[in-house]
Image 1 (tube, rainbow, N blue to C red):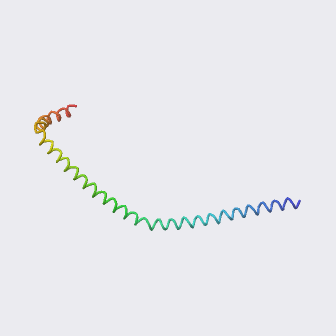
Image 2 (cartoon, rainbow, N blue to C red):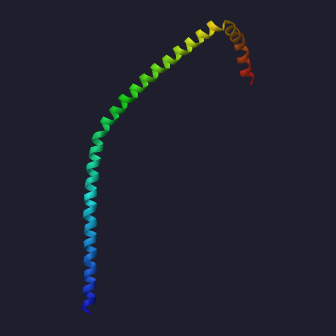
Image 3 (cartoon, rainbow, N blue to C red):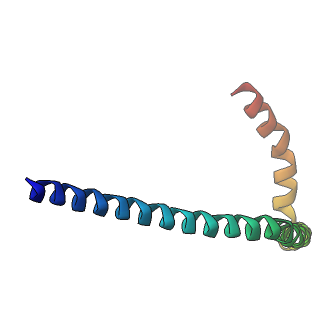
Length: 105
């Protein structure tokens, strides 16, 4: 009969040790996540500033590229009008008709 109690006591002792180890592991993980949260919280302002600088640079670049594109379109139109002056006159004459067609459609 004491063998049964001994087996039961050993099983309960193992369960307690397992639960204690889970508790210790959980405390360790919690501490790691708290440190990670602290670091991430401190890094947020630096990351935001970096992104603002990057967005500002991209916006300036886009503005420059849009301006360049507009100049190139003007240059293209100028060259086309030099090469084909009659096409320009026809296009200008047809423009009111196109507008009327779009309105009626």
